[in-house]
Length: 126
Image 1: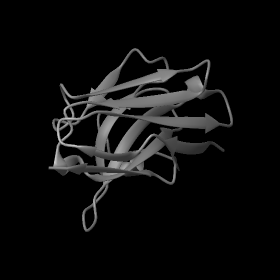
Image 2: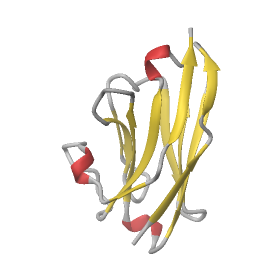
Image 3: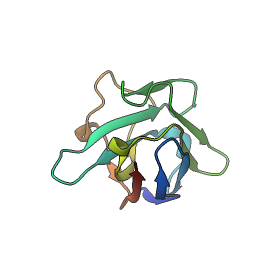
Image 4: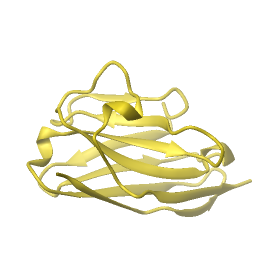
């Protein structure tokens, strides 16, 4: 079992930056691929970024490429999402997720991930 706790959300103006963090407890952190998903009101949960257990492989949604960077520190059991050039459409609850395998799959869907945090709110105003 893995417990995930997100932090770092908040309110920012368009063009600003935020850094989200997710602290994990449980078994060996490097065994798990990690990801960030987000969900805005009235929409389905959507993929943002993922990183393999080693940190060597990453994957991004088109909406995140060039603006967001996912990273992890296996010594500290944390995964982070640096978000730059934020837009109002980035407003959502951001969830950290863990997958019971170290590799990133070809399909980045919520069903591929086994453990979820409660989420942290990100609000971007224009």
